[in-house]
Length: 287
Image 1 (cartoon, rainbow, N blue to C red):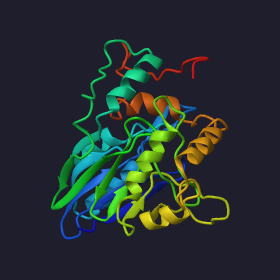
Image 2 (spheres, rainbow, N blue to C red):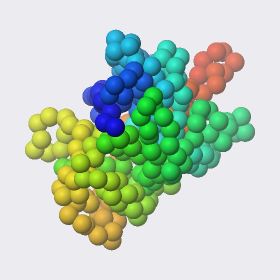
Image 3 (cartoon, rainbow, N blue to C red):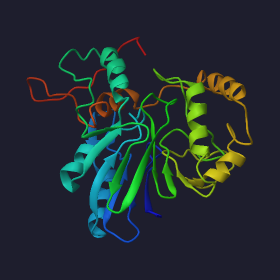
């Protein structure tokens, strides 16, 4: 089955969110949503999420799932906001518990913060399947960027999160806690073993040098032939060396601190304190 895919690009974070719907039905899934956030003021905005809500309502769609490919470090998830207004269950990979344990310590969350993934409605593992109306979704565990990364395959469409970018931009960084260039290479090979005509929808685009337009859809065949980091059969050792050298030169994402604190809670802010206000922590001289 070939899902109809509509993309929503957020220029502030270079994130692409997706609505994947049945070709002959009204059921859909929302993948990797964005809650707008201004770190200078600490204020959120729902413009990006509202665009998805308006689309879903105008098309008369029913949301079955609100899916996260991983715990994003560069934008906040709008999953709770979308769920409140559209319904659907929030799902992520079962290795979210590893991420929660790691960053629960980083942010000194204490015992009140649950590290069992219970903030989400469903935790997925390799080989799981679920239904979006008449469509079947297959789950592939694709760690490397983070331990919890998943690829969602719906018919001829694969939603790869940050594992792969457009062929002229390459692949994800692997220097976050629990990341691994070797694991990322192996995960990419899983994706590239799908049929060549499989459509790949990436989680971000940064408009590689020489390209005038943002883009987010490619194919397995194009990635195998042309991806600047793994295409044309580049061996594991060469990829790992390249990735480690490149990652050492990268700065931290602008929204990494607020993003991880909310996204490891399924998009919820930390519990309000006695004055009714939620606070996001900034560790000093730690990260």
